[in-house]
Length: 204
Length: 204
Image (cartoon, rainbow over all chains, first blue to last red; front, side):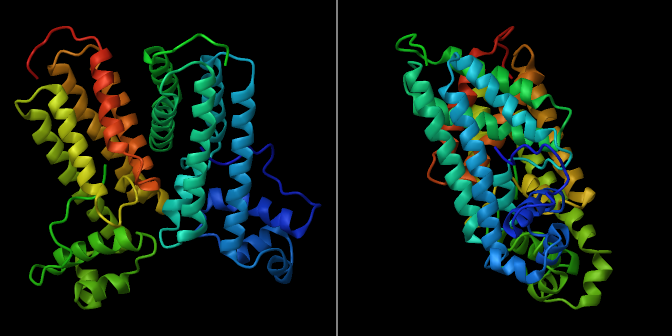
């Protein structure tokens, strides 16, 4: 899972330096890469003074940390909305695939943002590696209980298997955009649900 | 799928400049990252003169191309050996998971090498993007016929689904090394095979 949906590619003309820098990062990190985007480019794009950057963030790493935290919070809150809705598990899964697909339609799509960040910053233990891990674990901590409430036995293992499918199709979609990865993932996920034993048909 | 297995971390003292540079790349690209490894580091590591680098490769991109081609050839030839062996489809899949696992045990493991290369080099259309695509398609072109020979209906789709699992567990293994991703992938792959319809129980 990855970058938040963007309603527009233009940056806010208002807002704090911090908000403007985060918006600039959101554009440039995706199109040019996190590693390749220097502070000078971010300042230019945000239309702020260099001093404003350093009053908002201690360093580029500090900005990356804030950026990944925001993307994480955004995705996790969307997943909570889906998990808590009054839908069947199948409908919830389908909505998760819709969510994954909204990121993929961006021209600059390169795969799960947290995977991208961890790979782009191989020597930075923090914050990319930390957020990649937090993100994957938090997604599991939403899916597992969601499946448990729906009555699935071994719901944590089922959540892990669904995440294997999510990550696998995001790789396929980034390398082979024509591969119909999301349709395939949806079928695989539904087949997993159908095959999983369900103690009771409680409403999830 | 990714880097070839390395029997040793020491570089060859003999061999052409080309071989020494490729061996240096094999070490440094994994540990420091492809993007981060400069020609100077490669020359130092290979113990050759700068002129020797440029007589062997036109540019760093030319080296990346040769490096990815070699890794691809190595993995594909191993997969052919597995696919052509006198084993059951289940045994063959198990051997593919063993192969994936041999890359993962490297301390510098960061996921499928071709995914890593494509993400690390976002602006380089070639060669990383090209090889990532070739690699994924060639893996499918080995798995599909392997499954068809074993009598599976819709063998190409089954191969695609297996590759979703491969890619998904490589992501999980890189971010959460403790997640038992390979065991999970093996179970998921075997469950897929069991659920797939098989026209005839031919020996594959």
